Structure formats: C-alpha cells, structure tokens
Length: 626
Image 1: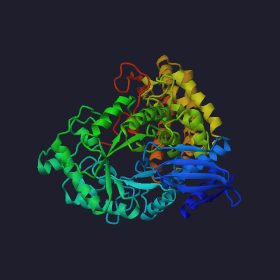
Image 2: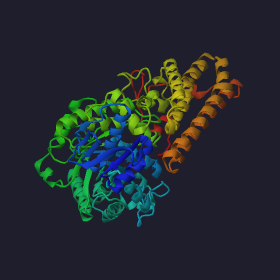
Image 3: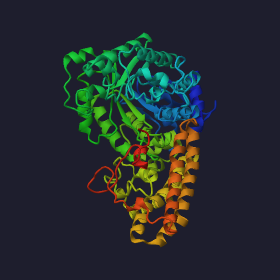
Image 4: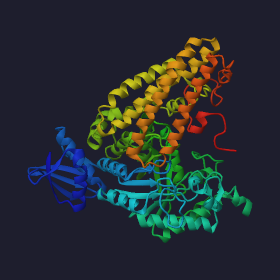
C-alpha cells in the first residue's frame, strides 16, 4: 500500500520509516493522500474526496492512528473513526534487573510494537544495571547499560513520542549492590539501605544525577517497595527502635529532595505506606491514615498502587479509594505475567487486567503501568506477553478486548496471530488448573526443575493426565513454531519444554512405584532408554533457550540458567547411575525412593500449586545459606 503523508514532521517521517515494513506500506508521492493534523487528545480519521484526514492529540498516538488507518483499508472496513483514550498515560515497565538485560535491538523492537499499540511511556526497571562513575561495583558483570546505550534507547523511543522513565530503587531490592564488600556499609539489613547514613544518600544522589543525565524525561520512579525489615538491622543497633513509619517518611522526603535538586518529578510504589500500618499486609482496605502522617508526605510525590493478583473488582475499588485518602496522585500498575517460569500466564493476565481496568475507569485513574517483571531469572521471553500489552491498549482506546477485535489489532501491531501468542501459556494450563485455566499456578517450572528421585512435587502431579496434556501441548507448539515468523524461536522453546515435561511429569512417580514393587523391568527401561532420552531432550531445550535469550538479552545472566539446567542434567544422570547400581546389586536400596512423600507446603491433598523460586524446587538441602 502506497501512502503520501502531508503535514508531518521529520521525527514523524522517521517513525513511519521504522514501522512501514511492519505495516506493509510504502511512502510514495503518488500514494493515498493522508493529511495529518494535531488535535486535542483524541484520534480521528475522516475520509474526504482527496484522501484522508488523520488527527491525533498527543505525539505517541500518531503511529497508532497510522496503523488503524492501514488496518481498516486492508480489511475493507470504514476507515473513519474516533478514539477517546480513557487513560492519559499508558505505560510498560521492562525489568532489566532479574539477570536479563534486554539488548538495544530488542528494546527498539518492543518500542515499535508499543508505538503501534499507542503506549506513551516505558519504564526501565534498573536496580543496579547502569554505569555509575563513582561506584564501579554497580552492575558489575551484570550486563549494565552504559550511558551511551541509555541515551540511544531514550532517543529511539522519542522518535515515536514515547517517554522513557528510569525506575530505580532507593531503599530495598538492593541485594545485587549490597553483596559487594565495597558496598556493605550502606546496608541496614538484608537488601535494605541504611537510612540516615550520609553514604547512603551520596550513592542515591549519584544514581539520580546519572538518570537525569541519561534520560530526557523529568519523571523518575524511586522504588521503595517491599522494605519490610527497614530500621530493624544496623539502624536499630545504631539508634535504637524508631517508629518505622516516621523513618520511612523521613527517608521519603530526603530522596524526594534529591530528585527536586535535579528537576525531577518522583513516583514510588505505595505498598510500604500500607505494610507499616498493617503488620506487613499491603491489600488492607481498612487501613487508617492519621492526618499528621499524611501531612508529612511530599505533595509532589506520586504513588503507584500495584496489584497483579486480585480477581475481584471490589478489591481494586477499595484500594484505589484508600490510596486517595493520603494522595491525589495515583498510578495503577498491573501485570503481564511472565515471572512464573518459562511460560507466561496469558489468560490470567487477561482476566485480572479486565477486572482492574473496569475499576480504574470507574474511579477516574488517568495513568496505568503494565509491569513485565522477570522474577527468579527472567526465564520467560520478553515478547511472550505481547497479548496482555495489546489488550490493555485496546481497553484504553476502545474499552473493548473481544477476541475478534484483538486478532485484527494484534495482526496490525505485531504481524502475527493473537491466538497463537495467547496459547503460549498452554503448558501452564494443566487439567487440574480450575477456573478455565485462569489461576496463577506453575506446574511446568517445578516439574522441570524437581529432582526425579526426591520427588518434591510428585504429590502434586496427576501423572497420566499431565502426560496427555503435555503431549497435546507439544503437538500444538510443533505447528506454531513454524508459522510465527521472527517469533518462531519463542514457540520452539515451548515445544522443547513440552517434550521434557511429557516424560518428566511421570518419571519420578513411575520409578517410585516400580521400586516399591521391585519391578526391575521398568527400572531397566528408565535407566537404559528413558533417562538418556530425557538428558538429550534437556540439552535440546537448553540449546533452544540459548537462542531465545541471546535474541533478546545481553549474555550476562545466561550463566545462571546454564548452572540451573546443567545441574538438572547431572541429577538425571545421577538418577540413572543410582538405578543401574541397584539393578547390578552394587547397592541394596535406593534411599531416595524409600522415603514417604509429603505435599510440598503441608496441603491436605495434592493438586497444582505455585512455587516462585528455583532453590525451593530443586532440593530440600541447603543451597545458599550457612
């Protein structure tokens, strides 16, 4: 399709050149005439005898408007439309701190997709993955961004009118900084900074100063979430017990003062305001905020209410109302679930997202942020959650997200099928995952990592039903991995994982049963055929995962996955050897299989569960503590 644009800036011309291949258009002086006008806040497309008038309100809406026009012309639909966005800002937060630091190329690809969807902001969550001139251990050997990289990424997003906002931490989540001996003096306890220490504020100021120099945005996210033990370590030793809400607000004001020095507008996660009043509980809609406390909160500080879990609109309603009691400046943060393993939780993201949107719309929330956390190793592809991002965009601009509409929009913005991408969570949807498969459970991760002989999760696995399910997943991913173009590698990873899970989900159960019955034939089949096959399947998965990781991320952090999967391969090899020793009468018993299994967390019965961390899945033995 050939198009001639009139009334566009050089920056907009550059933006169109970046996305023209995705949209399948050419810039041609003899093409369809599109006259571009700057309006208020809406997107309007009108047809005239000479061509089309495209009107957009804000810079980030321009590429979405172009995509909508092209989509409707290609689909032979009436191109005339009016979109009035519900939110003034719609943003994405990309996690750059859980071992995966996205490459510049992957970031730029994401920018193009987000521009076509109509996003206005991107937050880069960086605990330590940036250069600090005075602190060489910040991001050391972690793939940290250079100043040059951050400026280039910021400038690229600006072509599309997308604002890049640094999201840092100024209180907790500082494990990767504080683990270095050179930084130990900044520690209060665990991963928390020592409040009231001048050395702490020197470090924080260096971060904020650096962010102000690398990004054009005047906004900054200063973090401060999940600091549950604040004031209870070295601070307690040095000063005795101090009211922790007073301590939190004092620190808050000190950090906000630093942001003001550099002309920045701060936001922070809101949970500690609730936790310190409610014995650690965040979602406490009965919280009472004393007027004296509220007065001490900086007026120019925006609070981010985050909720990735709640399945009832009433929870969001109550929490938004409660936030408004201590601040009128509220952002809502939802989640595109990619932090439960190697697969996303697409359907759960969809379910809770629609619920949260209904509440935000009703309560007049004007800014929404969708988080792409990568907890526990960033095992899941960054691009696997594109359906959730597309859904939030359509809720913002159209207040609709039915499958037919989403299929058309996804095809325009991504160039692929919406249904295939939604089905990237197939492995998660085991037959016993009730609620139409829309509960956040992660059997694939714990089945993948658990030790075959120890069987930590065997009580939670319905062997034959799971095997049939994973076989079904493998058949589907085998088709999908060949029809998703530049994203085939994501489906390849899922296909390889399905092969492993089909075998591994029953391996420990069958081995234990065979051992108890002294069925040496089955033990022999596992030792000579099935476990060697499993090892080869795991190696093939690791090879596919390397491709996925290196397409999206810097190499740093991949070592963690290699260590995990390398250990898994060795444990399968050890299981094979132990069985062979037993069959050859070199040992009289397999002690691991003599143990009576329990449920993982004391549940009365099995069934699927959710465990977040690798080190809980692989062994009951000590991994990282004394």
